[in-house]
Structure formats: structure tokens, C-alpha cells
Length: 207
Image (cartoon, rainbow, N blue to C red; front, side, top):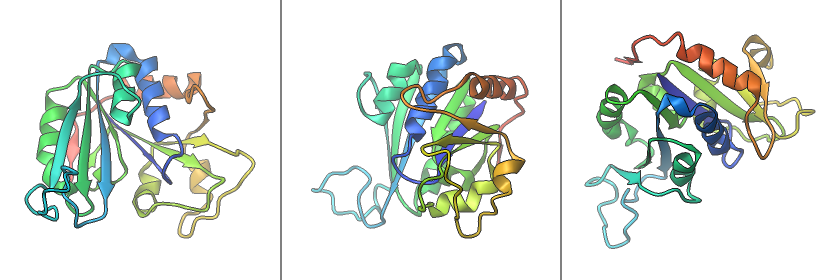
């Protein structure tokens, strides 16, 4: 199974939701990948001595080997079998897709934390984490909003968002799950993921 977890903004709990799914379903044997995209013109290695502006190192994929407070470390701590951090400049994610496809073929279940990866992959399940108290919505979330199979709501549940180009009826047309800190999971959400795992079809990629 390929599960993608995205969100409408930064620092709203996407990693917490992903880790909660991993922890709730340890028997799935997850391989998890945190995908970070940053402004173009930087080397993905993060080394200031490298001045390739991203052209020589379009992406860097690092395996997390120990549980830690980092996002990929939290995936391991939650029970993932393997965990990685993929770093790439915006516009360069496509270079990493062959390696992600190989990972998908050789893993039982894969969780990717990203919206942008939907440009290249059709997941079996796409969960979109939403903090409706925020006016902010990332372009990547806007582009793929209605491809979500379900919405996971965090934050102030009394707020009704106004996001340009996003009809509020979309929020009523798909399943929605409310999660709160610190667990960031609900029995209903986990059952929903389990149900999807029982209906897995071969992973398809966009042409």
C-alpha cells in the first residue's frame, strides 16, 4: 500500500498524524519517507561548501537509523521498519521519483509525507491534514485538495475556512476525521486506513 499524508500548511501536525498511523498499525511494516522541498538554488546536501545550486545534487535521500526528535526519527520511534528523509529543491522532485518507485516495489507498505509527490504517483490512500483556523494554504495542497480520500482535521474545529478556489462543499463530500494532540489519531481514522489497506490495488504512476 502507498499512503500519502499531506497538509494545507506547515507545522500543523502532518508528521504527528503520520506517526500515529504507523504506531497504530505496526503490523504493516511501514517504510516512511519525509519529503522536504525548499527554494530552488540550494544544494540538497545542505553543505555550504557545495555551490552546485542544486544542479549536481538535485535531491538527497538519507536513511534514519535511530529514533530521534526529527520527523524521520519520529517515524522510527513510532515503529516504522525503515525511515528516510528526502530533500530536494522545488522543481527537482521528479529526479527522486525512480528511487521512490523502487522503494515502493520492495516494501510492504509505504508512507510518504508530502503533497507534491502526487504530481508523479497515485497513492492507494491520500490523507489531507487540515487546520481550518489558518487562512494559509500551500499551493501543493490547493492543487490536489479534491484528490484527498479523506480529510484529517486538527486545530480549531469551530472555524470554517475560506480558501480561494476551494469550495467548502468538498469538505462535506469526503470522510472527515477530527484528531487532537497529543495522540493525533482516532479509532475511526485508523479503521479507515485499515479498510483501505484491505482494498489495495497495484500502485499506478502518472504518465
